[in-house]
Length: 208
Image (cartoon, rainbow, N blue to C red; front, side):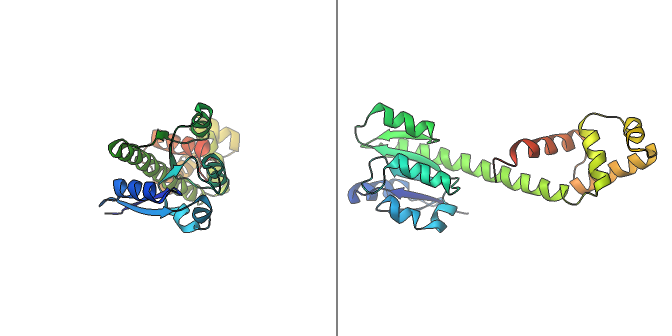
């Protein structure tokens, strides 16, 4: 079983230890950081982490500022903020910035674990989608220019006869190109082809 990494960032040693103890388990690896600066210096942990549990009131760099810095360097980990009494505007800003939740201390361990497990599930699904889209992009890269022309017209809903006229080739040649496209894209049906290519067009850029 692959253990998902969760990073706990809190400059209060007692709180940091309590959060880590609440999360550590057979399916979760926990790394603790005493501040935002120490986390930002550990790019390996940032790249691996599925979830970050972050104090919103860090002394070196504020939680919301850390959130912005992580987003700027491409972190895909979901963030669960924990905080003592705070301004409502701070929580709103954090959630608008993409945080999964904003929990008030003392944090209920069961609630924390539930939210972290939710974050891990979302991260895992996003990772699977990225892998799928990378594979589709690689398959598209194997198509010849003519096969790409045929694919584009198939995606537009054009029939073989229309594609043949448009490209100045025979219908049989179009059929051959379509067959090779299906093989190279590793799909069994036109519907599967359309879904894969459409998803790749819509989502590949934001996920890079």
